[in-house]
Image (tube, rainbow, N blue to C red; front, side, top):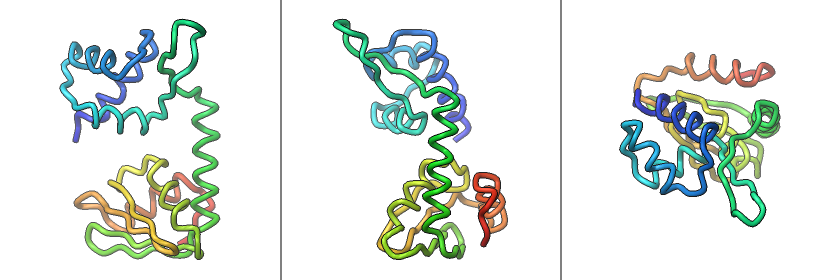
Length: 156
Protein backbone atom coordinates (compact mmCIF):
# COMPACT_ATOMS: atom_id res chain seq x y z
CA UNK A 1 0.00 0.00 0.00
CA UNK A 2 3.02 2.29 0.30
CA UNK A 3 3.16 2.48 -3.50
CA UNK A 4 -0.21 4.24 -3.83
CA UNK A 5 0.72 7.64 -2.33
CA UNK A 6 3.83 7.77 -4.51
CA UNK A 7 1.80 6.72 -7.56
CA UNK A 8 -0.78 9.45 -6.88
CA UNK A 9 1.99 12.05 -6.62
CA UNK A 10 3.48 10.77 -9.88
CA UNK A 11 0.11 10.97 -11.65
CA UNK A 12 -0.26 14.60 -10.53
CA UNK A 13 3.26 15.38 -11.74
CA UNK A 14 2.60 13.75 -15.14
CA UNK A 15 -0.75 15.48 -15.67
CA UNK A 16 0.72 18.88 -14.76
CA UNK A 17 3.77 18.46 -17.03
CA UNK A 18 2.16 16.83 -20.10
CA UNK A 19 -0.89 17.10 -22.31
CA UNK A 20 -2.54 13.79 -21.41
CA UNK A 21 -5.53 12.90 -23.59
CA UNK A 22 -6.25 9.29 -22.60
CA UNK A 23 -5.79 6.76 -19.83
CA UNK A 24 -3.67 4.66 -22.20
CA UNK A 25 -1.28 7.59 -22.64
CA UNK A 26 -1.14 8.12 -18.87
CA UNK A 27 -0.54 4.39 -18.31
CA UNK A 28 2.44 4.65 -20.68
CA UNK A 29 3.91 7.52 -18.67
CA UNK A 30 3.36 5.59 -15.42
CA UNK A 31 5.05 2.50 -16.87
CA UNK A 32 8.08 4.61 -17.81
CA UNK A 33 8.13 5.87 -14.22
CA UNK A 34 8.20 2.25 -12.96
CA UNK A 35 4.52 1.81 -12.02
CA UNK A 36 2.62 -1.15 -13.41
CA UNK A 37 -1.11 -0.68 -12.79
CA UNK A 38 -4.30 -1.82 -14.42
CA UNK A 39 -6.71 0.52 -16.16
CA UNK A 40 -9.20 -0.08 -13.34
CA UNK A 41 -6.65 1.01 -10.72
CA UNK A 42 -5.81 4.08 -12.77
CA UNK A 43 -9.51 4.96 -13.05
CA UNK A 44 -9.85 4.78 -9.26
CA UNK A 45 -6.72 6.93 -8.85
CA UNK A 46 -8.08 9.55 -11.28
CA UNK A 47 -11.39 9.62 -9.43
CA UNK A 48 -9.63 9.99 -6.07
CA UNK A 49 -7.51 12.85 -7.43
CA UNK A 50 -10.63 14.39 -9.00
CA UNK A 51 -8.89 14.56 -12.37
CA UNK A 52 -11.20 15.91 -15.04
CA UNK A 53 -11.08 16.53 -18.77
CA UNK A 54 -11.19 19.98 -20.29
CA UNK A 55 -12.06 20.80 -23.89
CA UNK A 56 -9.19 22.07 -25.99
CA UNK A 57 -11.15 23.23 -29.01
CA UNK A 58 -10.76 21.12 -32.16
CA UNK A 59 -7.83 19.16 -30.69
CA UNK A 60 -10.07 17.26 -28.25
CA UNK A 61 -9.80 16.91 -24.51
CA UNK A 62 -6.96 16.79 -22.00
CA UNK A 63 -6.79 15.75 -18.35
CA UNK A 64 -6.56 18.44 -15.72
CA UNK A 65 -6.26 18.59 -11.95
CA UNK A 66 -8.57 20.74 -9.85
CA UNK A 67 -7.12 23.96 -8.51
CA UNK A 68 -6.32 24.15 -4.81
CA UNK A 69 -9.35 26.40 -4.27
CA UNK A 70 -11.62 23.95 -6.13
CA UNK A 71 -10.24 21.09 -4.03
CA UNK A 72 -10.84 23.00 -0.76
CA UNK A 73 -14.37 23.98 -1.82
CA UNK A 74 -15.15 20.38 -2.73
CA UNK A 75 -13.83 19.16 0.63
CA UNK A 76 -15.94 21.77 2.47
CA UNK A 77 -19.00 20.49 0.64
CA UNK A 78 -18.25 16.88 1.62
CA UNK A 79 -17.75 17.92 5.26
CA UNK A 80 -21.14 19.71 5.23
CA UNK A 81 -22.85 16.64 3.73
CA UNK A 82 -21.27 14.43 6.38
CA UNK A 83 -22.21 16.69 9.28
CA UNK A 84 -25.74 17.29 7.92
CA UNK A 85 -26.64 13.60 8.01
CA UNK A 86 -24.42 12.11 10.73
CA UNK A 87 -26.04 10.75 13.93
CA UNK A 88 -23.56 8.33 15.54
CA UNK A 89 -20.69 5.93 14.92
CA UNK A 90 -19.73 2.55 16.39
CA UNK A 91 -16.56 0.63 15.57
CA UNK A 92 -16.06 -3.13 15.81
CA UNK A 93 -12.89 -4.64 14.40
CA UNK A 94 -12.45 -3.45 10.83
CA UNK A 95 -16.01 -2.19 10.49
CA UNK A 96 -17.58 1.12 11.45
CA UNK A 97 -21.34 1.54 11.48
CA UNK A 98 -22.33 5.14 10.90
CA UNK A 99 -25.96 5.94 11.70
CA UNK A 100 -27.47 8.80 9.72
CA UNK A 101 -30.70 10.68 9.47
CA UNK A 102 -33.19 8.82 7.30
CA UNK A 103 -32.31 9.29 3.65
CA UNK A 104 -28.84 10.72 4.31
CA UNK A 105 -26.73 7.54 4.23
CA UNK A 106 -25.91 7.94 0.54
CA UNK A 107 -24.52 11.46 0.92
CA UNK A 108 -22.70 10.62 4.18
CA UNK A 109 -21.11 7.55 2.57
CA UNK A 110 -20.14 9.54 -0.52
CA UNK A 111 -18.59 12.20 1.70
CA UNK A 112 -16.60 9.61 3.67
CA UNK A 113 -15.36 8.07 0.41
CA UNK A 114 -14.24 11.44 -0.94
CA UNK A 115 -12.67 13.00 2.15
CA UNK A 116 -9.58 10.81 1.73
CA UNK A 117 -9.75 9.41 5.25
CA UNK A 118 -6.82 6.98 5.37
CA UNK A 119 -8.49 4.71 7.93
CA UNK A 120 -11.45 4.00 5.58
CA UNK A 121 -11.09 1.62 2.65
CA UNK A 122 -14.63 2.20 1.38
CA UNK A 123 -18.29 2.44 2.33
CA UNK A 124 -21.65 0.86 1.60
CA UNK A 125 -24.73 2.99 2.23
CA UNK A 126 -28.29 2.03 3.02
CA UNK A 127 -31.13 4.37 3.98
CA UNK A 128 -30.00 5.46 7.44
CA UNK A 129 -26.80 3.44 7.90
CA UNK A 130 -23.33 3.48 6.34
CA UNK A 131 -20.99 0.54 6.74
CA UNK A 132 -17.36 1.68 6.49
CA UNK A 133 -14.66 -0.94 6.00
CA UNK A 134 -11.58 0.09 7.97
CA UNK A 135 -7.92 -0.69 7.42
CA UNK A 136 -6.46 -3.41 9.64
CA UNK A 137 -5.28 -1.97 12.92
CA UNK A 138 -7.50 1.12 12.80
CA UNK A 139 -8.77 2.06 16.23
CA UNK A 140 -11.95 3.92 17.04
CA UNK A 141 -9.87 6.76 18.50
CA UNK A 142 -7.73 7.05 15.34
CA UNK A 143 -10.84 7.20 13.15
CA UNK A 144 -12.51 9.80 15.37
CA UNK A 145 -9.32 11.88 15.47
CA UNK A 146 -9.17 11.97 11.66
CA UNK A 147 -12.87 12.82 11.40
CA UNK A 148 -12.33 15.73 13.80
CA UNK A 149 -9.36 16.91 11.72
CA UNK A 150 -11.43 16.81 8.52
CA UNK A 151 -14.58 18.22 10.15
CA UNK A 152 -13.69 20.45 13.13
CA UNK A 153 -17.38 20.74 14.12
CA UNK A 154 -17.71 16.94 14.30
CA UNK A 155 -18.98 15.64 17.64
CA UNK A 156 -19.37 11.96 18.49
